[in-house]
Length: 197
Image 1 (spheres, rainbow, N blue to C red):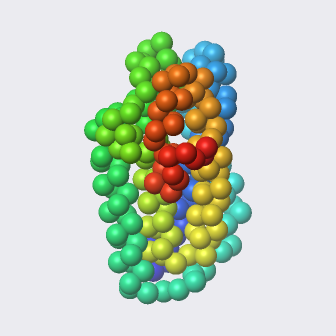
Image 2 (cartoon, one colour; image 1 turned 60 degrees about the vertical axis):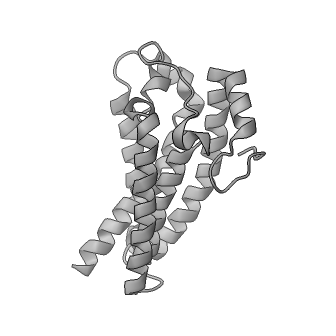
């Protein structure tokens, strides 16, 4: 049972840790994705699956190695998990599934082009990435897996890059409206309002 739980934590951790890398494959090429004919989501899903499988292959030998084993770590993991769920729920009220899935970016002709600045987005520009980070932190701290701590750092580094790339794409789409929004609202809770991230 212990091995199953750690393997689950490893797999879920890989999924969350690859989200920034996946979006780095989408945002810089949003215009190209828009110009593709046919369904792009199966191809995009294939790219993400390939990333997950590559990371799984690279980390598999160490998937059960832990820094620690403690009941308290499960409690701390549960707290981070709760923060993640609460953040997702708050975001969902104003953001919507179409924007979360990137449909508004890929098919602007079908979906309303609106910069969301209310709800959680009034406090930070990228609360979704904070929610993802809460979840990755929950599985990392809760399991104590060494490989998840490495993937956590990887997710932070690629996440900062992803935010910068996404901000450029949003500025190209929304112009002055986004520039004004960026001036007054920080990227995520870890940055101040004047951050370029």
